Image 1 (tube, rainbow, N blue to C red):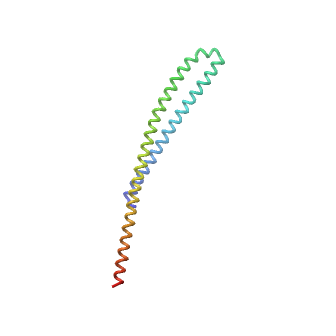
Image 2: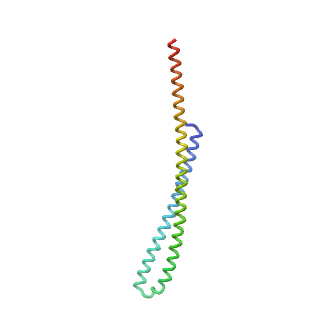
Image 3: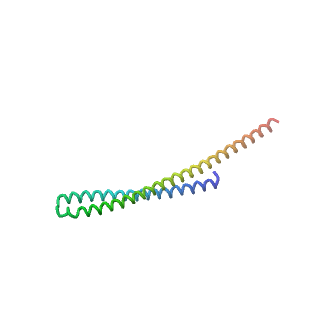
Length: 135
């Protein structure tokens, strides 16, 4: 394989690696946000259960639930943004994989052409040798 094709393949592999790391970071952020949202749901259920058993906290429950609803909405909006970023990262990674495969295919085609050319040269040399012996 030629030097230029190896360089292109290495660069494409590096780009794929970088994009995989970026996608992993985005997925980790999304998972963390989803866990925070799940925790908020659990806190809301626990607070509602506590308010049902204690009449004094029942008065402040509506204010707490309003605040909880706002925090849930903020985290849900954050998750939506992260999902869009994740989709973009997945698309970029897919494009990088395609580019890498194209470079690998070009390099393989060049290698096969070189093998064929070498075979033709060897055949021509053997034919020449056979013709010389026949004379």
